[in-house]
Image (cartoon, rainbow, N blue to C red):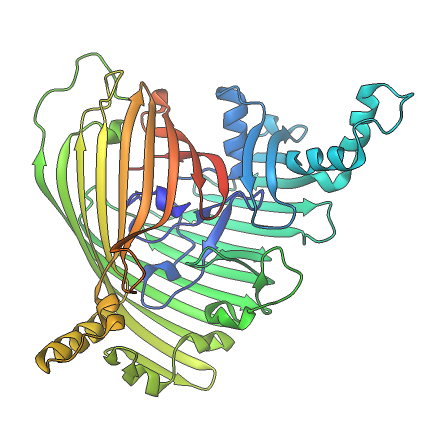
Length: 481
């Protein structure tokens, strides 16, 4: 999940595609939001495609089957994945063709329990097992073909197919070009998979996007910007459901065209950084996690979105813009018919502390990070104004206004266990404003066991589990700070 990424990866602040085992492709875009960088969901860190990850696990980590678990759709459950290379694909360095197969083990066990292990007493046991394995509804396949057109250009085509009639085949095409200081991505998906802030998955019949992002410089501090044009065709529906229930609630996924531009300015401050020498002749398990420090970072930016079509419903009417639930609303938003423009600001503050150089065998890495995120400047200013007005007039403070002022808080903790293995937990934290709520509430925790691949300088295999989503997945991560 996205929470397993730190505040800033090499490609900047922008939200990355979320990892999920709900599909073989392994990713879902965040639902476009308003006044926050999450509208720019095409951004990716240094990430291999799911077939290449499976190929790495099988070739270099001797993992013949990759386990995963998901209950997102009716055919979910515990599954095993296996990659098969297409004939002659390894012989051509400019083409990479694979078939990623998935067996639903949980459904296989359920069928055996339901129908009995021995269907024919006169048949050998292995033939009875073969009868159960011949059920095509147990399998799913992802046919992927990647073409390296030039050193800077690549084209990925994929077709994800399920034998079950209730699952629609998923088709995707992704073209990427690397400019000297920018990354360009063109993507078309049918259907496109999205996930909202509540963890619900949505399918858009056809999604097309063009994404241009500035490349982070060698210094973390500085200006970065992002432009994304997105087009949705057809009404959205919940993933795994044949009915389009509550589709109208996802305004930003309704049919239409939207163009978003955002920029941010980041400044890093080193409060303390260790000057002690590292252990000689010992390579750290991860070079990005080998410098003990205490540092802070601040980010401020702005975002503007123009919508044309039914997705313009994301922008509230003028009356709601002027008078929100927190009182007078400070923000720029105009809607006329099926056209709308919305502008807002955002900011975040983070504090990171690390002890240990991740070189010794035991407990040589302890890492803590806190992120305070203010996704909407207009909402924050409206809430602060309402709170100040209530205090000035000796009235009871409006709880919704207080909640609007409070930032979205995420805490991360990582601890080395032994050698390259470390444990990590990421979780949101929010204040309880209702009478029956506790003062602090843990929101959507994610637990992970990481294995650092020392020979690759900064890479790791991550096995994570999300109790809220009931998802488990193993994947590769590269160059994460």
